[in-house]
Length: 524
Image (cartoon, rainbow, N blue to C red):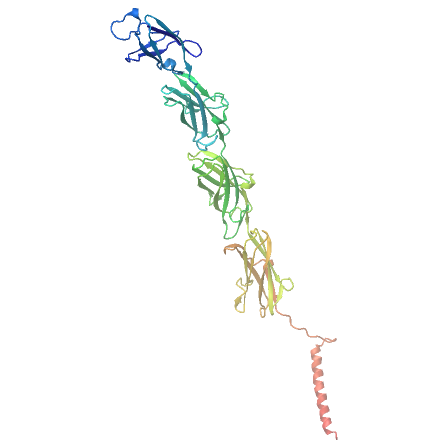
């Protein structure tokens, strides 16, 4: 008995070669047969049962035979025919089984998602060392059949593959799947410094025997597989750490001041270490602000918790020598490799600019009674010193303390064995204004002399912030004079009235005495 049939594809095209195994169900004896290049299969030439082959009898004795397809390169992407049985019951007959068709396996497919390693989304910062995680799902694989997977990082604008150190930024792996669906992961690591605004898209190809059997994102327009490189930016706002305004008000003992600069950042990598360099420059010239000839700057380490946020940098300096000048804060951010990744340097940025002003006081002393600068050296007097101030911080507490100085000696003025002082505690509503200080004392016996009011201004912490002590300042000076003697009236001829009154008094006494004597002699 001889079997014959034609093995074809589903598309009714015969296979070039098919590999089948025919086995005796009774004995297990089997042979492998090939089709010809037209898919024709025959058992002619086979001999089952042992002994000397008798071609006249055919190759298949009476039995039941199992026909099954054997997997090979030619049918690896096809569904193998199910094993089937053929019962041989006739002698010297060719059993034509007709046409047996193969079904194609589903075509392999690829799907993938690309995400920024540092961000977890479809963006990456323009940093020196970043990565893209590419996860590729391969479906409809043929278990046991070798495949290759090639993925590339491509510029979607030009279609060119990105290069790193002269090599394409790509991966190629070979694998033999054990499942019909498997996922492969890749990391593309590169420097995105200077790439702000550009995009990176990932393309993929699945190959079998060197031929592409599946591809994805060949048009490079798939948002799920595209990463956009975003600029890392900072913006800053500087202020006086003492009160939050943009005026550095310094005093005699408070010239050491702190500038706080709030930095708003975008596009940074959480958990990565950065260095922030803060510098101060003169706004008009752009020259560095210096202390003792050394530029004022500081370096701060910064590790963001989120890709967008804000943090504060403080920098201290002595502002003496910069009175009535403006200074601007410059910020530069470096990565761990020392590369500049963001900076904010704008001399015309008002948010970054501060003005230095010195706290000053001027005083004007006078007699409280009449407002002039002349007092009489007798009784209790009150000197009123009007203290004008500039560049204070509204809402803060200040204290003015004054003392009287003898102008002739330059020493503290004393009365009743004590120095004469005055004091006023106040809280200004505006930066510039005035406050009065009173000096109350007994001026009797002072004679003719001049006294000068010296004033000092202190902040709430007791630090001296302004002084006005000028012994030659007329506005600070008041004068004391002896009380005037009473004037004696004169007659018309120039003789003092008191002389006439004296003679008159003597005459009156004489007349009274004579009258008394005459009265005693008169009889009652």
